[in-house]
Image 1 (cartoon, rainbow, N blue to C red):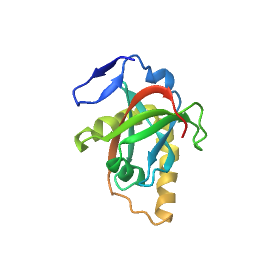
Image 2: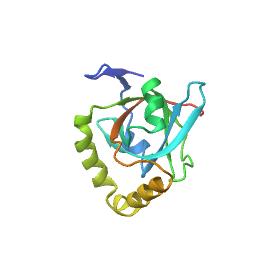
Image 3: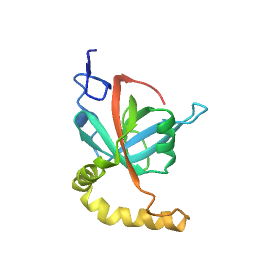
Image 4: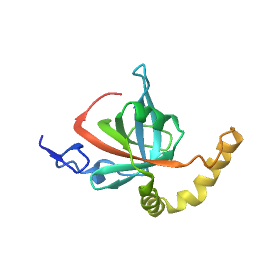
Length: 152
């Protein structure tokens, strides 16, 4: 498999069609704990320039795990997290806050009705569970590193 270099010194496979591989509304993002155990979370995403973009809370555990270990696995999934294909190895990084508005617009375009119906319910449940609003969001950029399917 050929690899190409992009501006941020990240390698990615040439010829991987993410739009075809990751259809639908959810991907299962598996990040890894210190002990090596994987934790899968279904998340909303958008595809842009051969990368998957995910918006998440700054203080989420997945963001904390990715700050420590950028290795992740991604696979298309249902809202409940049921995988629809085999996972693909990937590398995640956190974008600077200056990109937040642009990615939020992309997410709004893709998830217009879901953001109107689902997001308020999600926020209400978080408040009931004691989480504070307003901690901020970060953007995870996920770059698949191989087409080879690996088990979770």
